[in-house]
Amino acid sequence: MSLRILLCASEVVPFAKTGGLADVAGALPKALAALGHEVRVALPRYQGIDAKQAKPKPVGSPVSVPLGKETVKVGVEVSEQIPGVKAYLLDCPRYFHRGGLYGEPDDAERFAVFCRGLLQFLRRDQWRPQVIHANDWQTGLIPVYLKTAYAGDDRLSAIATVYTIHNLAYQGVFPPETMDQVGLDHSLFTPEALEFYGQVNLMKGGLLFADLLSTVSETYSREIQTAELGERLEGVLAKRQADLFGVLNGIDCEEWNPAADSLLPARYGPDDLAGKAANKAALQEKLNLPQRPEVPLFGLVSRLAGQKGLDILAEVMPHLLQLDVQFALLGTGEQQYHDLLSDLAKRHPAKLGLTLGFDNPLAHLIYAGSDFFLMPSRYEPCGLGQMISLRYGTIPIVRRTGGLADTVVDFNPESGQGNGFSFRDHTAVALFGAIARALLTLKVQPAWRRLVQNAMASDFSWGRSAQAYVELYRRAIKRHRS
Image 1 (spheres, rainbow, N blue to C red):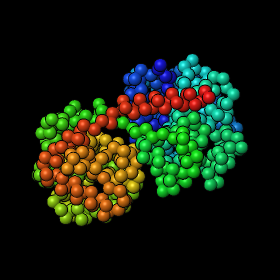
Image 2: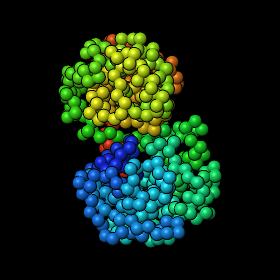
Image 3: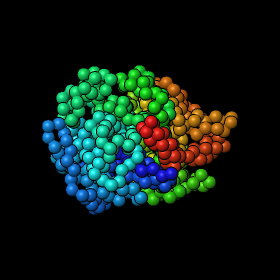
Image 4: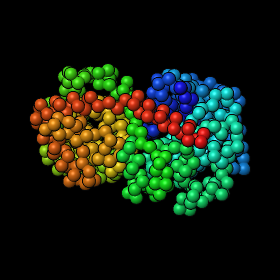
């Protein structure tokens, strides 16, 4: 039996994006629709959304949204820019026509307007979902409102909720007066509800009030129940352990396909890797590196931050640059890493090609043209880079954490099993050891060919993940009814 599913997120590709959440929120609905389910998505109508591409059409008159002591009018528009999936764009210029998506002093009010505006619209609309899939702190109030302000509303009471944590480090923590601003009773300002060390925590609301919880890999679901990675919510998550599930994200296999990637100079597949060699040469030329096919080339496409392992990579880089290797690094982030990498690039122009910023065609070329892909993250809820690099036959070197642990299996030259290299301790020594093992394997061509073939045979398409979510939705609906 098909389900009616509404996925809510603060960013959704192709409408608005700052990070991986948008990719998930854009790709998962398409995969669910392909399985025969009726899927819709909802997000704020930001000023930056391209109206020519989205072609939004109003759905009735604006809805009235109670917000503290006032009432706000919110328009609802529908777009069909995602094939087979209707998208609701909630329009309130006062809150959403800003320069960016986040980082405003009134973010709590902004996303309260989104959450409650959506519920007000669903009360009126003929179409109602059986389950709402809420994502991250910006939608944490949806389960809270449903079980408090709308608890006795017959039009909404049957809706089940699944709440997904994409990164526990970002929780939506605001001052106590936020309770009034978002229209919540002060009885919820307790440690058993939304109070969090004297503040209001919107993610905590989602964790406590949703029917079921999920996060983006099985390993991360266990890690966030520990003091090390629980971000002071480990007690709440341990309390809901039986309701917490890990569902690995997928990648868009149409966008990330080396056999059909229009952004590459040469296409290739596992049975013919000549195109990969051509892409390596093109990447070296692009970054003004000597075009030497035999030199090991390491790629990195990342936010340049300590969480992504740039701290231990910074320790290792000066030593690695003494070897006969090359690096293709793309990203932006913390100034200390901008400065350090820029200095290394000036001192080693024949070995380090650095691009500070975001460049999608170059990202594709790095995935395709590198031999190895570096992801030494301190923690990684899921990670998409390692999945993409595997599909392109570029061997990941990762720290064994979160989704990296669930997708990268250490290569064993004797058995021929495995698809990459990993290390456990978040230290420069452990990272260097994994890189050394990778370089040794590259020198043994039969083992290397087997490793590349294993990597390209890895399946991280959305179809598998979407089916897991369907099972979770059914479980949530059953749980909600009981």
